[in-house]
Structure formats: C-alpha cells, structure tokens
Length: 140
Image 1 (cartoon, rainbow, N blue to C red):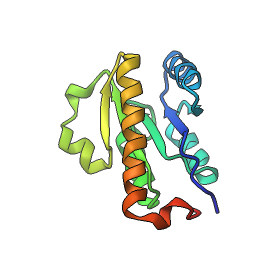
Image 2: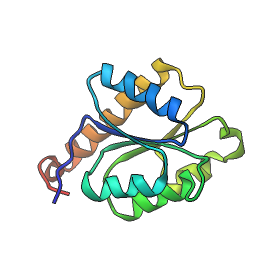
Image 3: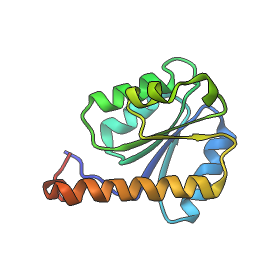
C-alpha cells in the first residue's frame, strides 16, 4: 500500500531536454519530481509510487500519451493528469478529456503557465479531499 505524497510530480516525455528543464524548474519550486522517457517506465513508477500530479507528452513511440492516460485512470488512482504537446491542434479537447486528462499545456512550455497548472492541480486535489475526508489519510 502506498500513500499519496502531495508535492510529488511525474513528467513523461521522450525529449530529454524538456524533461530536464521541467525537472529543474519544479525542483526549484520545492516539488519532488520523477521523469521518464516512455509510457512503460511511467507505469512501472506508478506501480511503486502513487504520484498525484502527472504531465504526459502526447506524442511518444510505443504507447502514446492518450493511451497512457487511459491506463492510469483505469487503475482507479486519484490523480490530476495534464497533457502537453506541440501538436495540440491535432487533438480535439473532448478527445483529451475522454482519455482522462484534466487539462493541457502547449509546448514550448512557459514557466508561469506550468506553475499555474501545478497550483491548479494542487487545488483540485485539496477540493477532492475536502469533499471526501477519508482520502486525506487513506493509503492507495
């Protein structure tokens, strides 16, 4: 059994420079960060750690971001998931929502937008706990 660590964030993107840049920014803001280049490794991480905030690139080899989001949501894990991509125009917002994404960010990523997304995710998590106090200390 695993407990949620609220300031823990997972970033999934094939582009190492984006992973490194996002990781450095989030660490400077006081968050715990894990990064990975693919969906398979992301699922392995989530088998061992219940990360409440996840950012997923949409275009990846193998399992793409849409399918990864669906797989995470199937696990019935309470988390906030954002898509991020340079190719957002190729996706219908309803398609992203039906896959389970809570929002999306266009690349290139601007720090103030990314910071607002993280703060929004933390607020959503607080609201979930407020309306379901049993989740505050419930192991996942």
